[in-house]
Length: 186
Image: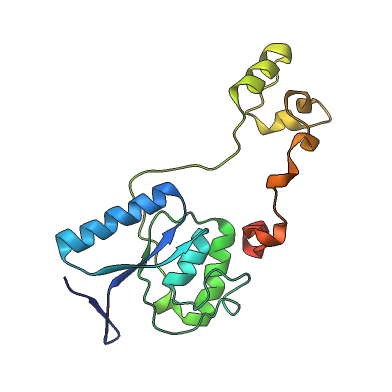
């Protein structure tokens, strides 16, 4: 197997891997194909819990998972040993951050979205079947529709547990989670 040559430096093809099952599987498949079929050396350069952090890694930022913008993440025009991230979910906020990243590292070094990996996904809220069916049968309330949660018109809370029923032993402070990363919570 061989390395790739980036700016005169011989390195393995580096992957930023996202930390959810489908993304880890896709990265494993890509590594197998690149190494076994194409003959490249590959490496995982980091495991990330957000698509934006992995994208900053591809851009060459020295601390891609740090909170804040490009300056806070150690971004600047420099060499990156991370060349790809697969199954990155980009939102409107992420695009704003990438625009500010472009101003720091230049348009040429900005990661490029190459398109879909062949399947689509969605994120959203899930309401279990039992409360959803009870609400529908009791009062024609469709809990899968966000407007059904308007408290001026409906009391959807009767179909859910109270927040005080949640056992607090398994909870963590916001400062101990990614909820304190500003770009994920704005």
